[in-house]
Length: 300
Image (cartoon, rainbow, N blue to C red; front, side, top):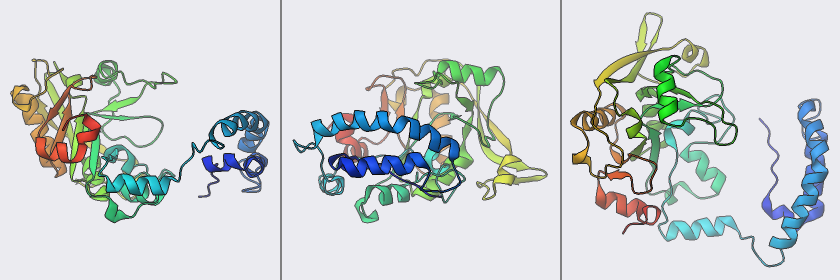
């Protein structure tokens, strides 16, 4: 796996920026490969260069560019809140999964240039169900009316392309894997309100591979492609959770669902999103949430 990056700081040295664009556009960074990409980038490179010149003239002379490593180190010292999308991104990490991205907390430290001791707490984010964009194994995927219901209620369409997202039930195997890989201390569950009105809410608690049942994420892609979900059905709820801000005010079945997810993934649920509004949030542990996310939530 090779990468060639265009750094923002390169804008201050337009010759170097133009040279990098030329190398990328000519395909010289990997001779004999990515020819289609090279042609496309080569055709676009001149337009990019001209537009970036305008950005450089605005940013560089007045010192709008800063050294991000210094800024991040200061931010860590000031206890700014940081969060990672653990469940989704852990399955996209270059080393731990099949896709070429650094998307775990360890990869974030490497990419941001901060040491692991700077990360005092790790908070994962997962939906109350599972979604995915693009190809790849998705054991808990729903292909019929149930998937369409989740997609419509959750507005699961690409923000730019409008492309429908693939939807399925909550995958406790994948989230538990993300908890382990990222060292998550707690998770946020979003879009609980999307499940309102369902008579039952299934959860993927394991994978079936032939005659075998596994409760851990397979290391081999071919085994993952053969997986079918082992489902545990939880009672649904008819009362609305949308806009609820207190855990005790949620329907009993919704509270039982959240508590079962906690049991399955092995870490507590710190926050629950019950709507699109900023304040549509249930806080399970107010002191811990304030310590971690005070600036992010706008609350002391």
